Length: 206
Ligand SMILES: [Zn+2]
Image 1 (cartoon, rainbow, N blue to C red):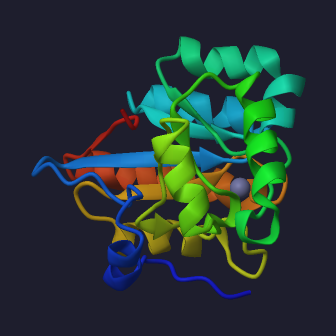
Image 2: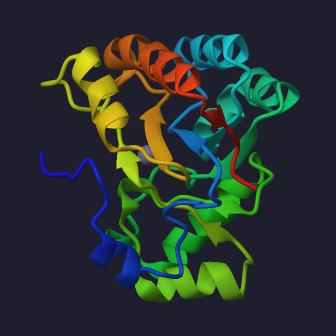
């Protein structure tokens, strides 16, 4: 499995139509949770966020938002934001444009948002342009990956991935999914604790 914990500046420059971080000079961090809502992980995350008065952004999969409508509503009721992450978690670069946009449109029936994050971060320049210009989405990528999806890591290592690489304005990825749950439950409280004690605030993406 290949991935980079920290997104290189060259990638950010090449895909400069996407949002990779939100620098403002303030000690703000932007936690994001992909692939939910999940009946176990999402309530845990909401509880943790509440404990630290943290806000976050949840990039939901359409079919999960449809299945977990109460949880989806709870995310919004607690002051967080949601984003569209397609209906079936499709890889843009391996999907026809028609099928990709149809899937996003289907997800939009259950996810009311102008934020979009492409599954796997894989999306063509054409798809980005169309999503922005025609459908008025903001494409939200990330600066730091916790790698909580990587079963070869410990939860502690995932926390260290974030603690070592996040800086003011970083967008950070975790997952509210079955696959990541074992590591997320260890890593997330450590990340919240560390950065709160360092004077950071956690905000949702506007
Ligand atoms: Zn995903």
